Image (cartoon, rainbow, N blue to C red; front, side, top):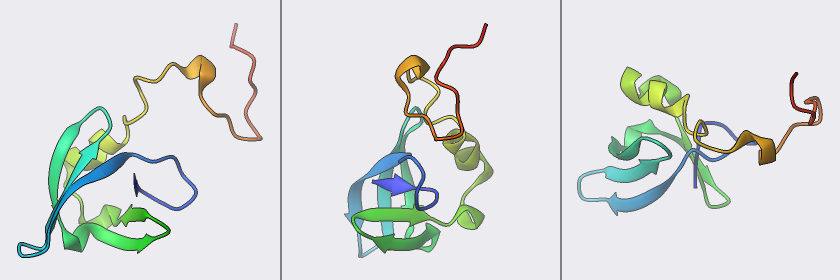
Amino acid sequence: MVFVSDGQLGVGAVREIHPDREQFVVNIQNAGDHVLSFDTIRDIHSGKVMLDLNQLEPSLLEALGHTHDAEYNQYAALGPDQDARPAD
């Protein structure tokens, strides 16, 4: 899985790795496949790829802000400080 920070929801998945070109292909939810350089990786651990937001193009940063827009929020996982009741 691909994440923007540890402890957050995943934003995508690695589909291909091209070590000879120092690139990888990641499928960002709601934004499709993107070819990224290894420079955009901040950390890798526990099966997680953490992206370095400072290395990403503005259009990809915009897409990352909308990865979970299509989810049916009635069943979305809520944090401990969020109210599960629908707003009136």
